[in-house]
Image (cartoon, rainbow, N blue to C red; front, side, top):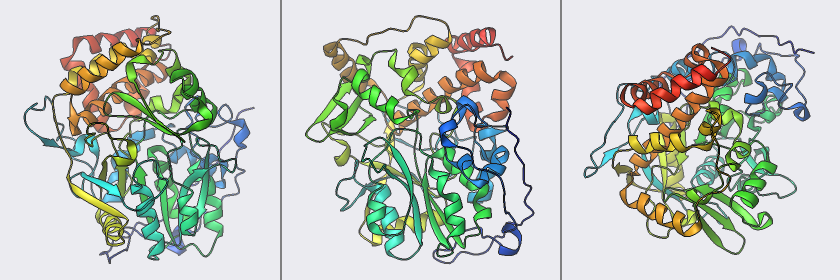
Length: 487
């Protein structure tokens, strides 16, 4: 039976005013925005994904598991105009859109370059390097946790929405919580590499009269949906702390399978893992720290390990958050581990700047100057697309069951780290590779017209550049169009 959704058109106004130290750039008018009272029935999470509006492309952000499901058609990053809405939403959130003309190509291998807006989003200040301070048990150094703690401890917010471990204490099972104490915030430490229903708590927030100032922590697709319904929560102040995000597993079980079968690591001892800038997967366990080159992973593991929604995402850098924490643009020195390395800190507006200033003054965060990088990234991005197992599968080609032998993979990782792009240039490589791969996915699944209509302008600029300058990629695009039933 098909689902029927009521689209509620809100009559409201966005009011702009001069900022005090922690006043948001937009406010909610109780008389206008608070007219939203949905009687829609939340969807049952057990029916995910097939009974959810975006079907297999649903990122399980949690919106549809609340009464705000009535706004899904205008909020979901994977329905209708999808992530194309970011182009206008950036103006609403930050006061202006990113400069899409600033794309950097063929960076000088001997000259440092810094992050540009077209790829990295609206920049209130240049992207910086940072480390968290005094956060025991963090997967990294605790930048996200430190900012969230300082906002709560100083009374700038009444609550923090974050993703904690599930009650079963499973390292990869996400549970959205409304944190009102430092102890609650600390439950959010560590990355949970599976789709997380951050917005599942929206009805609780609206019903809780003690919450007037909120910090929402989330990944790009969740932040986009949150921004779309933010005014309906009728809060006095809202702050958004985002993380860079790419290629989450669809379920905790898929993440566990990746660790066990892809990395051959005993899953019950794992505390977290990341694909790092040294072309290796770093795995943090209870008693050890393991590094395995990308190149040794079996090609067949990718299809089941990456959520379909992540293959249709074009917001790697979380363009609608006030502050964003990541790591792909940071240097990784020698044998550094996650909890020793720098992370990147992106401030998108004045509100975000005050959040970071508060964390620094609270001795929860330290910055280390502007992030930069060297080296061209374009050839590596296309080469990665050409050999990507998901792309090979789209083209009907054989996907290798096994990866390289470990010693060859180690040699490859060493060579790539030596000659490949570094710092911000490595981030450009990662951004472009994922945009190109994901473009091929939506081109095949949705057809050329919908793909173009649902992608942010900056991502289409990147795709068009590669089509114009790289014959191999242009040929792959043509082949995908020929194979797609949706053209």
